[in-house]
View (tube, rainbow, N blue to C red):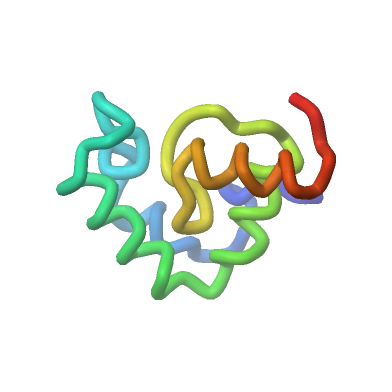
Length: 80
């Protein structure tokens, strides 16, 4: 599976990574903005799946924060 940065023209590449890796994971302003970018991106599903499968523990990927991804991994029986 390709990494999200390898997709052609992901929207996150247009705004920079600061919003996707806020200083505090629960920063509501940056997280909300990052998720709004993800919601418009054609690679949202692939990006989120990559982060789930590769146990990405930080940042917003595919519109999901680390807790959401961990919850999905747990439901799927995938242990980090």
